Picture 1 (tube, rainbow, N blue to C red):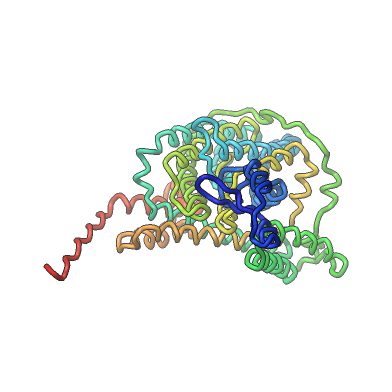
Picture 2 (tube, rainbow, N blue to C red):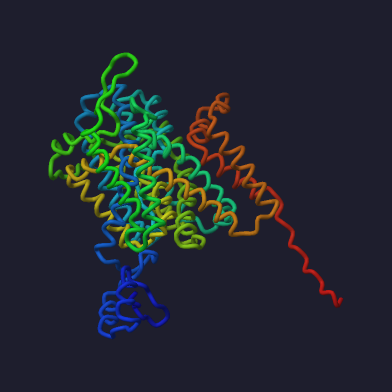
Length: 507
């Protein structure tokens, strides 16, 4: 393998090991200088260039991991608002909103990776439309009476809430003491645990599919998972790093071939015919246009306190989740804790990114936990690779046909990769927690936070007697109550007393 010799380190170039062996262990000065002049680094280093042949597939697999999740919240909220009136108006702008969601995610990701002044943490994070706000937005829709007015109120609240989160990020340093490793590790574990059920849902073909849990869906997901594991642990270099992409591409191929041997339709118990979830909808790709100009402010923002107050609370929650996501990628991908600057810049990017998104009619843009799992699993943290993924998202926002090709991915194909990625987040949380001594105090914080906090969020019926705002904040997922309990216990529980030094036997 060629070594790019630097003053203080030797950096391995992918695929160079075989070349090195062929040369009998002798380096050629010209080749070393050539590689050094290019400035290439490994995919496991955050800064530095990667060759295109590496950066493109490594970045593309990040897009595939988050594409569906990036669009789903908009589909849910626009459908809920349209049910209250203005269905025709929403039908006209929904495509523009989905297009803008991809464009905004790509732009905000680039800012997060490279930073603009204090905006951006320079961490290997992919940004996307947050699903954490779905519950509170549905409540706002009910309060506002539905229709375009409701969606406008959601946009207005997102603009204000994003600015509020930006202020939180700017003053994060004095608040950092509330987020030691035991707290952030618990939050990261909660994020992973909350996503595992989502991954398993996709594994079965998607919970809304008529053939959810069918043998065909399960086998497709299982084959994709096996392919990923084979390439991850049975190969080296680019093939190992791109295992998620390879698995998903193989899943596409399998689903394209299956109609030659299996029926693409089924019949429900009521006798209604349906198309199976694993069938690729090529008509959607054919009907998509090649180019479309993004539309600014497709929905006029409306500023209403009834929407701003509950949404503002959720922006505090998403700031805590971002702390967990950034801690997850730095621990799982870089083997260290996140710095104050990374956390502050990341949260500021979260806030301003959400405000920026609202001007394009897009729901709040936050760090994507799905991609935290991908970083944790592959250890690929190079920002050049992630930047290619961000550029691909921007292209999807400008080229609907390209976006359509990705959007037809069967849920079972995504699920085969998602279960592995999301489980990896749990392991990152464990790594964070055990990075400090596992004292009885820390064990109590983790166990009570996960048991009471996450359990409460997972079983929302227990909150039925509490005010609606409390239900919205703590009942959306297990992440928020677990984080709240962990922070509270860390503040209230007495610190561990230092262990006295053991006197030597001579004394």
